[in-house]
Image 1 (cartoon, one colour):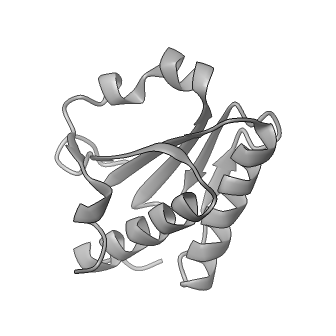
Image 2 (cartoon, one colour; image 1 turned 180 degrees about the horizontal axis):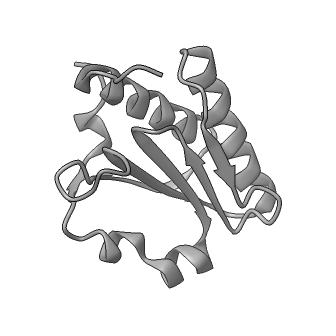
Length: 124
């Protein structure tokens, strides 16, 4: 896939957030890691309340971004659904159960990134 513009990356992040919100994800956070890592521009972190919801959140993000022309490169953890990682290249979506989100604490690990509000990537 070609390199995406910042606007396309923001659009991708906004669509992922919309999909998470539509399926009632909890505590959605975005970390802009573009200045501290080459692996992605944004981490989107959310949690669900149980395995079925976490899988539904994953499915919703994959479907919404796929329909918009942003294919998923890789998925990890879907079957166990305690931490699902959806890799879209420029954004990575992490969907946790509550226990694993607290345990892995990506917000602390990636504290060098900038936490931004979901509204910051949504279209004006």
